[in-house]
Image (cartoon, rainbow, N blue to C red; front, side, top):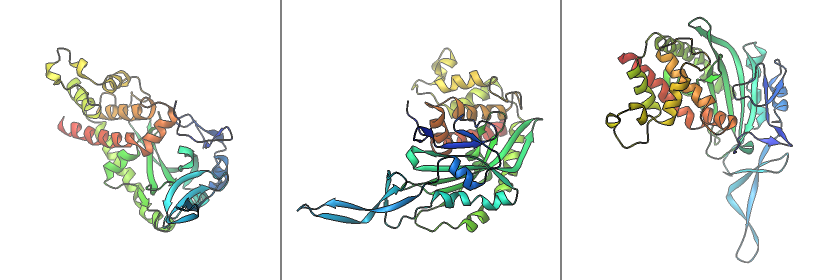
Length: 327
């Protein structure tokens, strides 16, 4: 089975405070760690550097590639990627220090950190004091996700990430879609300016408020069998070339994920909140992408934050709003 989580000296490069994360991975640590302590607990206290790339010339002499560098982890000499000479690495310690002001002000606590894809994707998650309740005890907490890629073509990314507490469904990209603004991205060709990024992140509370209003709206509109199946068909389309109207039994036309969605609709954690509404339908999709689809828990984690499943969540929220408005 393929794994995305990095293993160093037989230990998963990941740590978490508080409850076990939705992906169930990592080493449990104390809940009041500083960013630097979390960095070390997750095994991320290593640096990277650019090193010359050489090749053998026509006569056996060694020549240096002028516009390419090898990005290397200095702790073990492992190769991470080929980068341009203008590419500026951001050290993990610098990335984690981004959280210091929030922690010192009592606005946040470190929650999770880890390394994926053999060190190419390093990330840290801090839990803020923001969040909201829906339909009684359906709690959505806000987190701040900092992704520091040691990989060419990938930008540093900082984003507000709401997570549904009852089942740890990550709703980050749906939030961005609802608010009209996405994560803050910093290209590796420019110097990382933490103060400028924090200023851009100042609108995160407004984005969370927008998301709350969207969630409340979805929870106020009931679906029926027809609209629910149409919604799941949009999110999990069938591979069949035969029109659905030509099937004697309509369920035979549904994709495997569509059928699974119908199975988990009323069995997923938190199904009782907004039951029978498009909030329940939408959270069925987020539950599946975070807990059901994919080969393993760590590949689901990677896809939920950085891969194809984030796009599914964008589409799932947009379509849920469309169907709710048309109901």
